[in-house]
Image (cartoon, rainbow, N blue to C red):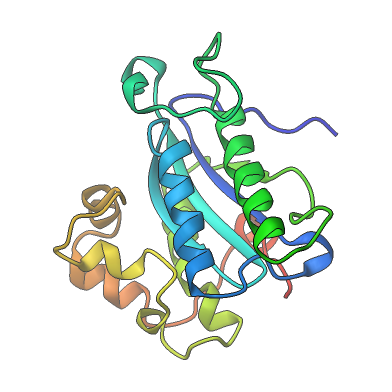
Length: 204
C-alpha cells in the first residue's frame, strides 16, 4: 500500500515502533542520540509540535514547512553532498537509517531495527491536533512508565512550559490550548479520544 506523501503546509502524526515490537532505545544516551539526529535531519524541514520516545516506539507531531522556508544551509545528507530536490521523506529515511546503523554497531546486532517504513497520518482539524498533543504526551502514563505526564523525561510536555530554549513550536502549542494553565489542566487527566485518535494506539 502506497504511503501518504508529506506535503508542505500540512500537519502530520509520525510514528513507528521496533521490529516485532522490540526495543529501539536501550539506555539513556540512545534517546539523546536519536533526538540529536532528528534535529540534524528533520528540524530544517519541519516544525515540531510534540514528541515522545518510549522503549519500543515513538510519536512526533510535525508541520512541514514550505520549500522557500527551508534553511538549505543547515541541511545534512548521508549519501550525497547536495540532493537534486528537497525531500522531507528522504530526510526521515536518513534519520532512521542513521540511527539503526549506530544502534546495530553499538550493540553488535543485525537486521531491521524498525518494524516498517514510518507511519504517517495527516491531521485534518485543530481539535484533532489538540487531542494528539495530549495523546503524545500522555503515552508514558497510558503505558504505565509514570503516573503523571510531567514525570516522564523523554517527551516535549515540559519543554512547552519551560523558559529554556527549545526546538518545539512552544508559542503555537500554547495558543492551541489558550495559555499555560489550560495546557497543564488539559494534561492532568486521561481523556476520551475520537476514532481519529484511537486507531493510532500502539501496544507495547
